[in-house]
Image (cartoon, rainbow, N blue to C red):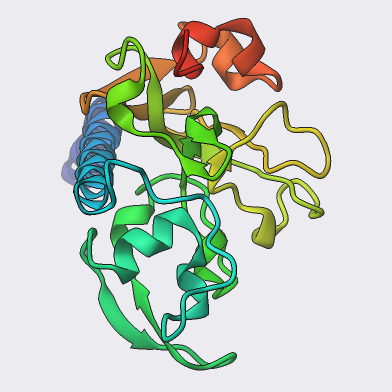
Length: 239
């Protein structure tokens, strides 16, 4: 009886030790997983920047326009947006896939999705992206040339985004932001920076090509509606 009690006690103690060990290791494992996802996100943003530069090399230095309308003859309807044109025109890796409905050939790419970001699941690729582009890089007639941007190492280019409006409700799958808009007003293409990494951080690629990570407590105005008004030095290409 005593031996049985002793064996039971030893077994219980081992289980407690195991639970303590798990409680110690779990935060470290979670932190490691978050860090690996952040690194993967940064790599994808870097690839998007390279794709944009490659596009510019072939189009007189200009970046892909935010909207191509009407869609050029012979191209999939999905490729009218700046991000998916990079894939459709092969400036970003992607696979050719048949979509139905509405049917027709299109391209699919994991490079437009953050591993932990918010993604629209609606089968409509132009809006199904975790990343937004700085809308202030737009001008009448198309996107500006990156070489004319002042202080390129400080100007945000593409980064983690969430939300979006253009006659859609914020959070609606079709309103998934593909561009940071003006101030998020209804009827404008808007959205906000998404602190999806560890719940507070967002990754960005800058106009000069480097990638950085910022937390909401480091750049609070970036994570609010009207962010661009608070810090034009980070958004306005002419500043």
